[in-house]
Amino acid sequence: MTPILDVRGVYAGYGEAAVLHDVSFKVDPGQIVALIGANGAGKTTMMHVVSGVHRASAGSVVAAGVVAGKASQRSLVSAGVVLVPEGRHVFGPLTVDENLLLGAYTTPRVAWQARREFVLDLFPRLKERLTQAAGTMSGGEQQMLAIGRALMVEPKLLLLDEPTLGLAPLIVDLIADAMRKLRATGLSMLLVEQNAFVALGLADAGYLLENGRVTASGDGKSLVNDERVKAAYLGR
Image 1 (cartoon, rainbow, N blue to C red):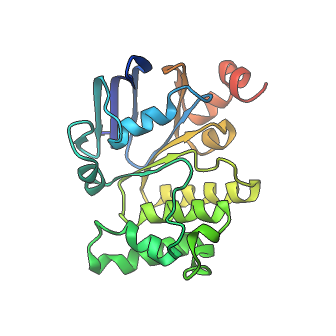
Image 2 (tube, helix red, strand yellow):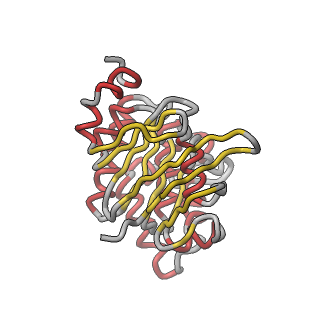
Image 3 (tube, rainbow, N blue to C red):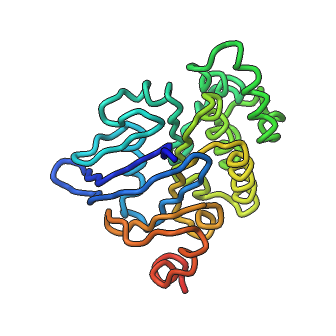
């Protein structure tokens, strides 16, 4: 099976500050793979390398058949690699419906309406707020919109950077349930999360990043029971 994402021996940093050191992992089609770790472990940098926002200094990243770092971000999006960044970043003055329309900029017009209905079925709260300015919604509703906007592209690989950060437990459950439904459609996801319980409960496979290095890997259940993970991230 060819991975939808294949990361091999990646090094990356900012100027002279090294962040990632020989990081390797993969996401197979239809999988949710979690990257967990403390603040500063390199999770977001890794996500930016995969999405083409930041270039690796060494190693290779192939996402949906496209070599990240050599292709433009637009080429990656066109191939189906879409990032939901940390902090949501919705277009606040625009309505929910206008945000979704902006997300569909690479989607053929004939497919736009079907994708919109798919997103609204996944997140019924958005259907109730189509004409509401996105910036006036709650943080949880804005996160739903950020994910929904990314889904308008009909991605093959969805990159989720801290999707539950700062959200109430009920909303976290709604986001997690949406991810399970998306996996059931065959969508592949790379999930960056500081909330290890949530991430490993969803993940088919997980990787622990510490100081920019992968120090443990396995399926979600095995990582939950890993003593290093318990001690460092689960408070056990």
